Length: 136
Image (cartoon, rainbow, N blue to C red; front, top):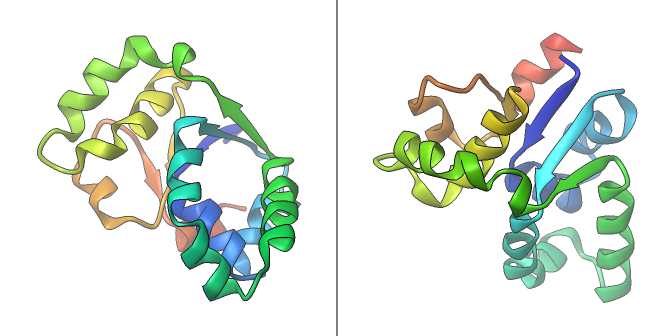
């Protein structure tokens, strides 16, 4: 597995706790990719993340930049042609997450997420953090 799409919850988990998720992101040679759109979700929950992680503004920004150093941000224009198919796949599951499926379709790779609803579709292989540990 060379390339892997990561869901927003993976980055949020890495921000909140210096645990397994952060170690996987920062210590293994995997080409992690993340749609830029996901940054909006991270900033939407920034205050909650800061509170749970006990981070101030500067610490949050520094840690986010440190984590994103290991992640390639994918602009929407690189995945837009796959968005319609992804919307169809996720329409009855969780349409807001179709951008992650579109990214996986565009790069023909699996996705890492701990959101259970991703496993409700069968088009893209989904790995949980627990499954990731078995693979690496």
